[in-house]
Image (cartoon, rainbow, N blue to C red; front, side, top):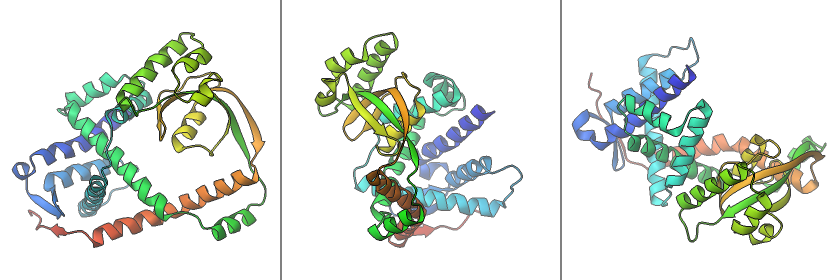
Length: 315
C-alpha cells in the first residue's frame, strides 16, 4: 500500500510537468505568475495530490482543496523563478541519487520505479524533470532561509542559560574517499565511487583504495581516516549518512561542497558536548526554530513583488 501511494504521488507530481509542456492546448489558464502559467489541470492534479496525503477522516471542501493547491503551485513557480535567476540547477547525479533513495525506501530497484511510473503513462524524463524541480526548490529554499534565520549572540546566550547541562552526543570514527568535480562531472564522480564501493563491499582494503583514489590528500595518506566526527557538527548530508550507518558499513555516494564521498564508520562512542559544540548546536536549534517564520516571510516577499493574475474559473 505504501508503495502504491508513493507511486500515485509521483504520478500526480509528474503529470504537472506534462501539463506544462503544452499548457495552452490542454486546458484553460487559471493563474499567471510573472512569465509562467498555472492551468486548471495543474490545480486539479495538485488538489488530488493534497487529498491523497490528508490524514484519515479529514475531508476539506473542494474549494478549500483548490485554494491550497493554487497557493502551493504559485509558491513553487515563484521559488523556481528565483532559482533560475540564481542559476541553481539539479545535476543528473543528484536526480539519480534521489531516484535511488525512493527505490531503496521501497525495497525495489530504480528501474522498477521507472517501470511503475511508465505503466501510468508518465515517461522517465518527465519524472526526472519533476524530481529536478523539487531538488532545485529545496536548494534555493535552504539558501534563502539560512541567510535570514541566523541566531544572534544574545539568542545563543539565552538558549545556553536555559539549558546549562551539556548534552551527551554520539561521536563517530570515520574514514572517507573523496572525488572532486573540478575535472569530472557529478555523474562521473558518483559512478566512480559506486564502483569503488562495490570493490570495498567485496573485501578490498579501504585504506589501500583511499590511498590510491581519494583526492583528500591529507586523509588519503592515512588510509582515508578523518578521525572522530561529532553528531550534528558536520554538514547535513554527512550527519544524515553517519546516523544511518552501522559500524563497518560503507555509505552510498554523498555530495558535499568538496565533491562526492563514500564513508565508513569504524567505531562510535558517547561523550558530552564541548563548549564550542554547545554554541554551534544552539545556533543550529535557534535557526531551525526561526526557519518556518523566515520561510513564510520570504514567500510573502516573493508574492508582493510578483505579477500574479487570477483568471476567472471555468464554472
